[in-house]
Image (cartoon, rainbow, N blue to C red):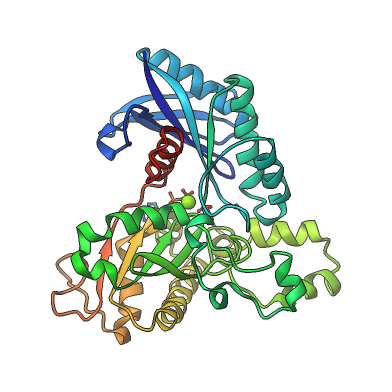
Length: 394
Ligand SMILES: Nc1ncnc2c1ncn2[C@@H]1O[C@H](COP(=O)(O)OP(=O)(O)O)[C@@H](O)[C@H]1O
Ligand SMILES: CC(=O)OP(=O)(O)O
Ligand SMILES: [Mg+2]
């Protein structure tokens, strides 16, 4: 039997997973399989693919909860990978608050901290906790490593993380944290392979997925990012509103008579691309639609990215490169083109012959632009390996 690391990414309605051998530092080449249980609670479906993309299974399962989904995944892994045994788990955890600047082994204290952060990541944190607790029941004694999306941003300056609020409120932890850190950390790691010396310069990474954020990197460290106290802030997302005037919240509570729970639901689940289009939060659907409200949602999405790009370039004091990543960033030539056209003023010259990358700009372009696929799961596997084997560096 060979040991294996199970990576768990418990999202709002899905549970994604990956399996890597536990013997040495995980690499892309060593991936054993990855997959997802989609539609948890409705018509759940387990799908898994091998490293090369070959489908290993796709079948309906009974999974009312993230815990049920994990039980099904573990049983399938047991049957399919008879030579491997899960010896450690790594979880992508969206919010680590002020507490965690690095991954930690999960214990009761870590779980208690995560419970206290549920109000700050209501789409994610409850499912992370459910997955950890289910795995502890299904696999007692299994070491589980929590890897926080907030950790990568911990080195940001005080001015970058502060809100202009009274000090006492800031001291309670009401500040900007930033998210998608595992994605940005992965990108920062591969930047030198793609950009050479420019990797150490001023780079804005646009993580355009279901959740959307951008991060300004200098010398491959996070300097500023669009998300704040929670992953509701910044750019419009599939169903989240992004930055709005906080008075909108007061207005909804006081003038519209909405309850806090209803406002939370509105801002997290019914806004963003879905809210503006009234059709869908899925970018593919919107780009394929001829409804003017779909076009308006896409226009607002691109416009807000352009404004935040200017803001991050200002925070960095200049711009050398732009990187597109995650579902929309990696797969939508149209969104990339529109964002880059809007960034012409920064010195971006599109190479019309290179729409599928990896480099999207002409050699003469003052600012280069790139597609770099992200790999949050690999980053989690590396952190879990580093922590458990004691090697330190992921
Ligand atoms: N070819 C494509 N064109 C446009 N958008 C795409 C394409 N492929 C995927 N997407 C979008 O990517 C988003 C999901 O991104 P992803 O990073 O997978 O999300 P999650 O945060 O859920 O992991 C969806 O809005 C989807 O429509
Ligand atoms: C932090 C965040 O928004 O995550 P996701 O993109 O998975 O929703
Ligand atoms: Mg995501």
